[in-house]
Image 1 (cartoon, rainbow, N blue to C red):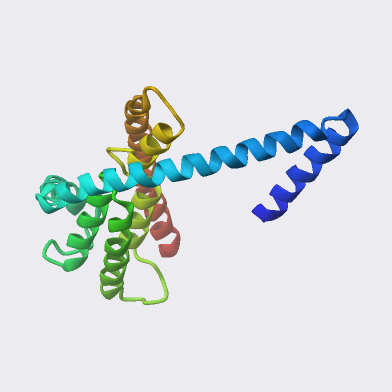
Image 2: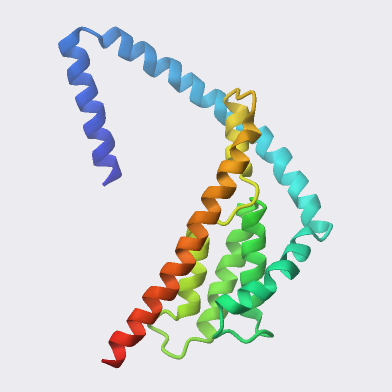
Length: 197
C-alpha cells in the first residue's frame, strides 16, 4: 500500500513540475537530497556504533539489571497472571529495560523470548492472553528513557542541540505508555464482560 502512495506522490509532483516548468529544479533537488541521504546514513553508522558501544558497556556493568530490579514490582502489577518466579516475567523485564536504554538490537531477541515464555502460560494456544496483549502494547508504546536513535539522526543531520529531544521524548513515551496500559486494562475488562454475557 505504501508503495502505491509513494508512486502517487511522485507522479503528482512530476505532473505539477511539468505544468509549471520546474522539471530542472525537481531533478536538481532529487540529486542533492540523494547525496544528503547518503551523508546522513554514513554519519549515522559511526554515531550509532559509538552509542551502542557505550550502552553495551553499561549493560555489561549491570545497568540493565539495575533497571530490571527497579521496574520489577511495577510489572508484577501489570502482569498479574504471570507468576513472579516465571522466566516470562524476567524476559519481559529485560526486554523493556533494553528498550528504555535504546538498545533495540538487544531488545528484539529478549522480546521474542518473552513472548515464547508467555505462550507457555497460555491455556488456549490459538488466542492471546491479557499478558501477551499488555506486553505488545508496552512495546508498541515505545517505552524509552533515552531516544538514542533520534539523537544520532539529529547529530548526523547537523543539529546543534540534538539532546533537546529528550524531554519531549520522555513526555511522549509517558503519555503513550499510560495510554497503552489504560487501553489494555479497559478493553480487557470489556472483553471479559462481553464473553460472560
